[in-house]
Image (cartoon, rainbow, N blue to C red; front, side, top):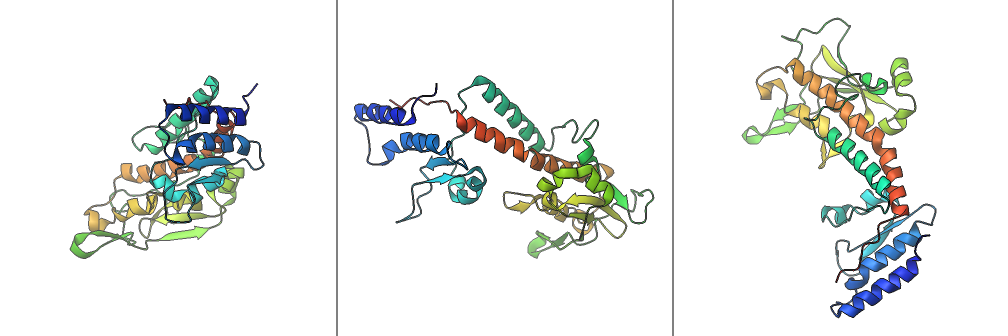
Length: 281
């Protein structure tokens, strides 16, 4: 039987008062957060409380209630302050499942870590159709002349600084083969796709729109990578390994996006039964 949230809140408040070290208002934020999150877990949609958000001046709240899909969007400023605490599940099996998901995500985000089914071994069917290198009109690529990057993904700015260019990304609908392979996964990857060109004869076929638009640290990952590989800036063509690296990166990003629903579901299950942190002494 789960403990009563209100009883826990009052008990926690009493414990903090006994220390004699309370400061106004903020000392009781943690038990309030726990109480409101417990109540929020019973609502539809579920909400989670987070306190000690970034102070933005008079009239701005010190905390907020968020649904899982609002968390990253509405708490962006607070996230930049590194304030969120990772919710810790009470049950050991749930913690183990969360850790396993974390390891999957960490491997996908590590460009040096091989990921079976994504970058090595038998590639998952839905990923196999993503970003294979192609030649316009068909046929085999000639690595000695077909791997130059010449569509202005990057240009030399003032002082030789690399600046992003427009490049050549052709948007289109999925082909019948691609749509069949991706199936319902287009909900996570996007309704359309792009062919990403190196030059006039070579391109990576079928980079789904959400994979192409994926950002980290405010940068569009794939476009940023290409901007530094423009032949005029790099001083050489791409190697076949680099061409394959782009394909693998597209598949990594797709796998991260496809992991999203499982990560969201796990977060909600964790929040259903959190570990009760003891009050600080």
